[in-house]
Length: 590
Image (cartoon, rainbow, N blue to C red; front, side, top):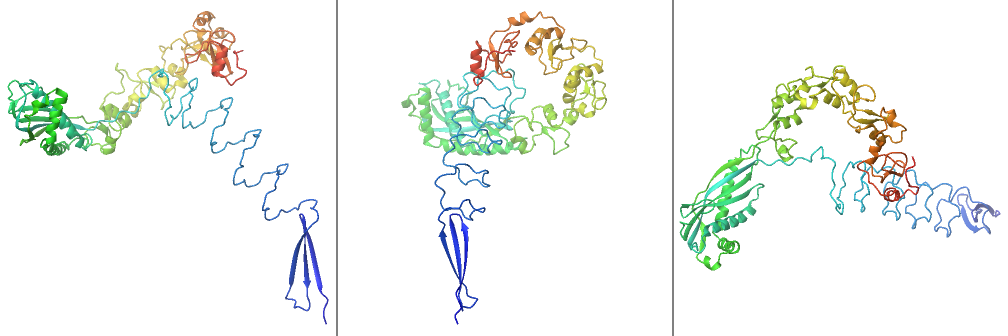
């Protein structure tokens, strides 16, 4: 008997479509067999709202039009490629953090105002247009490349540099050698000595030029070169450096000459000088023979005589051949550069020595690092802790007048300097670094933060300042560079600007303080004189973004301009030149 057909239908909704699954359970097919039929049919209209769960895969094609509103939150992952075109409107506010890499091209329009702080890293290329005013402080690192165009005028430094450039390189240990007894034979040759009275002098010059020009390029060891050639004998007649030719025949057979040679030593003490010189002599004998036995050498001599000494070539037809003679040259080492001092780290290590046995790395470094002309310089750099013994100086803690030097009392009350001879040994060993001839110099160097107490603690009533005036920024008055009652403000620090009068001090540094001169203990008598030294022109004040007038008095006067200020005839020229980005730039209003 047949069973009725069982049908199971399941329908679900998805956006814009509905799906149905009908399962036909067929009998009497075994239960292990199941036939599944699925079909998809579209809904007639879209659903009223989207599903809560997005599809597992995005659509194959993007929508033709973007959404009218952006998403509430950005995607967790940025797109792999930037948009093809930038947005038409920039963001209203910059990002809190700058990009890690600069843009590929600069912006078309510069910012209206420079940045508040300079960048920590200087630019790799110099600017095409120089700044109108110099920077307040030099950069910590120079630019990698020089400017494309030089400045129109050379710079003028206010003072020479306190630190010289790196010291020059040390000359290598060097020897100078005289090689004597070289000889050259002219075969079957007659010379025009009757026609040219200075012919042998000309011949000596030509030989020197041709032989040296031939040999020097063949010297491959650094530091080797032939310095000069001098003829000493002609056919057995001795001659000087400039030839005496009156008794010389015109038929020439032999010329003897000397060579002066220069050679670097390969070791600092030049103990290899003899070995180097013998090698140089062997080189000269071999190469000179090769040269003078060639027809090219004779032709070069003739050409030199014709070109440089106006000898007629036809008069040189008697010079037929040159060849090397059978002489045996000798040599004398006549000079060695002095050896230099270096730290004896490999020895007793108590000082500097000069025996020429310094290590190779010391010789390869510039002079002033390891090698020194003077013992005291080497001791100061490398043995400051044992300076006396290194430099061989006794009583180094005494000044030129025989008085004991002052030293900072760091191991005592640490308030002042003393000259009682109780300084630590390391100070005595290096008095140049630690000790001073006067109390004031010691206090200035070691107790500048407590100058008045330092000078007073030692009972130095004779120490006085310059009696000039400097600003006191705590009380906004000007005080005098002296020790005592007001208006003395104690000795000025090294960084305090000093002025001859209280009026100049107030007008220059405290011009906004009412009655500064009176509060400082002076009388307002110097204003007229100070005004006479001002120009009435205008200079920039970056603190107020205005231009001040170079004059003394109320605004727009800003006090006397400093020597480095750029002055302009008008306030508008000042604003345009220095504050062109400040729309409200004008005269200082106080």
